[in-house]
Image 1 (cartoon, helix red, strand yellow):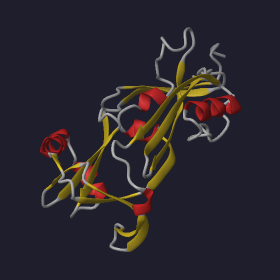
Image 2: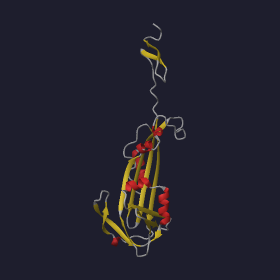
Image 3: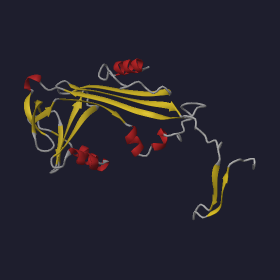
Length: 244
């Protein structure tokens, strides 16, 4: 199964994500739910590779790095205020575009944490066509990563789905099941021609182990108590239930 799933992901993402599962799935796996997304978009107005050159990029913390930057004039929309610069680059027939949001004061992590639909709508509505001679420099980049999302999903309010109390009767009939893992892989490539992006998410469903149960089969102590106050009304030891 390990090789079959990875081969499927490799095929569905045109080779961008050749390894979907990082390890063999658990032996009690009863189902895999997988989803793949692949995007390939050519810039409506491509960058000329001959104009790509080294440029500076300020890292968080203030250090400067040198990166390859693409360059062209016009053929984009932009918006800016004292805290943010935004650029929109269309693909093909402009049905899709890349919207780049660059905070000019706050760290990007803090900006992302406060970005809401109202702020995003303000930016999109404020986008205006750049002048034909207005220059744009944009770094080439490749991003890729793999993340096991179970801890995040638990923190977002889904702990039951990963526990023995999970209920998925429409997924696995006549067998109690729960989520075991949620593996997410993504890769994005941006260059002079355009953008390629792929993502694969695989959810592992396992059977819920049968409860061990409790068998009182040895001498025991018992207490009859009032639960709220903890007051003990009766207590005793049973060495032989037959009363011997």
